[in-house]
Length: 452
Image (cartoon, rainbow, N blue to C red; front, side, top):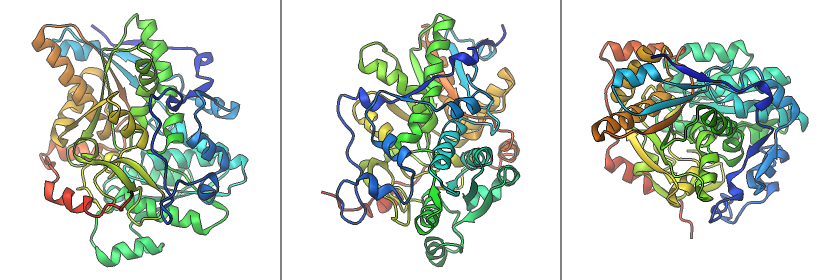
């Protein structure tokens, strides 16, 4: 039994992104101004984003055309392959069929260029000179650095301190693409200096790094801010994943019963599942859709669905999302891309509507699944993607236990070639599981903004 690959020609790269907002049975809650607590307008976001992306953020058009220059860059790795994991199925001795959409074939090694290229393009067209951003594990930072190199933009990255120390090769990749990378929190910004004054030995967090990147953009008219997850326009750009998967599953003559993706901010998960959610709303899809997050940062499974800031310094607008509180600083798990206190408002909303469900996985279980997958399929997954693999394996073993066939589809969001130190630590027994204490979550949630 061998892995089977389902390919599409380059002509089948999607020509438009799919916007699930057009099909939602209930609209999302509005984004609020952090000062007035009133719904924000396009002008409020203009210091941070180009107008084209602001309009995408609030658009309810079902299809938004992908510009030609963006599709030309996509052609370097898209359509990305869909595999059937026959060797993994055999190793598990399961009647389930397991398919995975592999996003690690991009030049940066993950799904993140799907939006990085689009954001860099729109900023270039509107005259932006420099982009500032944050990154956790470095997947997003390296993708934006690459996209900025393609379109002639400067790139400033604030990398969460724990990942800056754990993942030097990710930092080297960003710098090779021409980006300037600083460990966050830093002394370069007011928000960074304030955090360091209060917590000089902090690991940092995505919330803190966002504050620094937003501050830099807000103070410089030539700089805009770019975000790798969470916001609607970012998730929109990722829907090329799910649109291709729909065609590839049809090529395989199959339809998923369970769809799985790892979730930190929600972008790779949304990219795969939102085209299926759209079909589900129309009664054309009956699959269970499962978001998988780390037990150490459980925003969907233990967070509160309410308004909160997207950053620790409270510089961003307020969005309604599943959150652990903007002051939440998770432990230094190796799945750095999943260490965010909140979940994308769109992902949170479709969960509130009952269209998806969520579960969490411990760090050791995730790495065990990643090792098992690598030995069967030959791909070393990123630590983040291991969470999706762990749930896919769980679903396959449940099918075996129940003696039922089950078709499982998951997104393998990136490779782990720059994360080998985490595998070294796992193999040496140096990693541990972590359940975030309920009292510390309660403490962070106690600081939620008062919104009527």
